[in-house]
Length: 160
Image 1: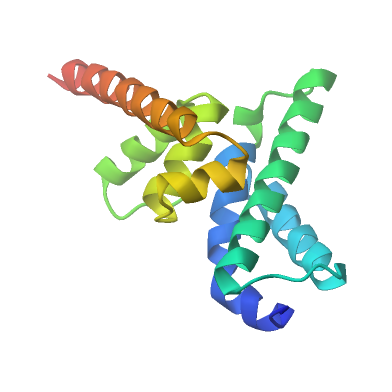
Image 2: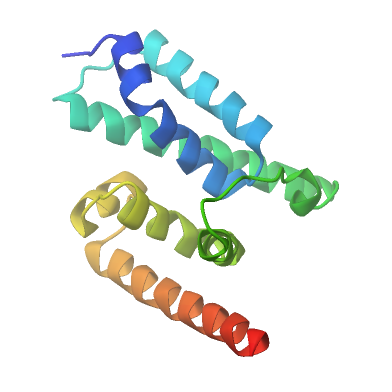
């Protein structure tokens, strides 16, 4: 079963965009990855079990493309990714500082935290999406949380 591309686009475009942005840290690149991912979905002849399987495929594809782009830029020693970052608006200063802390994490922790907290995937689903073991996902979540806690604690102490 393959769900119509337009239906999936309407349902998951924000999720796919957020997943790509969490890795490449650039709105324009994330938008390009979003379009490429849905184009690839539209052109594939692959059969999917259900809509959740399609969503997981879309997220995995977008994250893979974003990682490839990130590595390509890093190898070329182009301008730092921070120079490409575009400002985002947040409802509160706390949301902004949390976002900054998450984006500062190494990619292996950032992607797992994004899928767990922003996309509401379970540990077993994340393991399937990223082709990791469940215990590896748990370790990455734990270490990512620890790094976030330390980072946010430092920010809190600096404000005092």
